[in-house]
Each structure stands twice: as structure tokens, then as C-alpha cells.
Length: 174
Image (cartoon, rainbow, N blue to C red; front, side, top):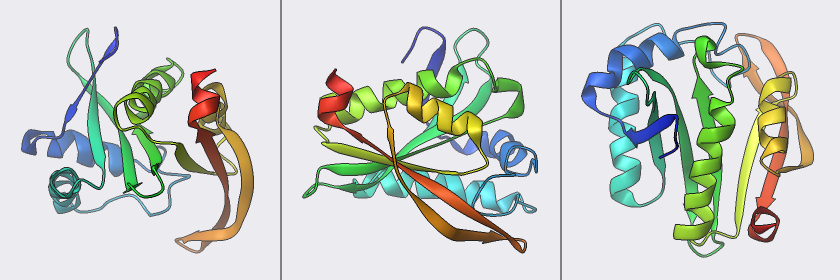
């Protein structure tokens, strides 16, 4: 879907790579749940991806590098609300993919689809206040920080805050 990346539906064969991604404590240090310890979580994730698509309430897409076909992460639009024309953006990339602009590129492609094809008016995203890299991705894409959710996550006893970001169609079109 971009020059460097291929976005596609998840397949059962992605479970090992997905498990490797979500069992990495470095990747998930700012996540809202602890790293996975059971491979079955990956299989459940893939099944949930199919369910979201079938029910028309979201899409989670695997992201592969176009040059070699290697899985590097995923991006999602979930919590679709047709009445409000809104959804939530999420993404997760392996550490080897950090710093290459892949998250920005992927999220930009998904946002183009959200606003142009799905005719959404608003997309929301959240990130841990300690995750400066994710905040930069959102801000590069035009998201505005709208507030802070205080102590909204407790993972393994670690309490953290999240920033809420919003992007409106009219701001995306500029």
C-alpha cells in the first residue's frame, strides 16, 4: 500500500512473528498490557482480526516490508462508529523497525483510507506519556494532543498516564 510497505490482512501463518513481537518486553514497555507469555495469544489476536473485519467494526492489518516480505508490525482502525464517523488508530512495530519512518508511513496510509474511503470525520489515538516516539508519529501526521488520561493503565503494578490525540478530517485534508 506504500512504496516501502505492504499492508494486508493477518493470516494464521503470522502467529509466530506476532507472538515474537508481543512477547518482547522492550516493544511493549509502554503498552496497556504485559508481554505475552503464551503463543495462543497470537492465535487469538489473528482470530479477533478476522472477527473485527467480518463484523465491520474495525481492521487490523499486518505490515510487511515490500523489499523482503518480512513482517515488521501492524496497524489498526478499531472502534468504528458509523453514526459518529469515528474510529481509533493503533499500531505496534518491532524494535528493528523503529526509526525508519514505518509507523508514520503505515499510519498515513491507513488514515488516507479512513478519511477517503470510509468517510470518517475523526480518528483518535492514545499513547503512554513516556512514549515520545509514538507521540512524534502522531504529531507528524497532524494529530493534536487533546488531553491526558491520568493513571489510566496499571500494568504489572506500574501506573501510567496516556495522552489522547485527535485528528479531524478537515485537518487531514490540509
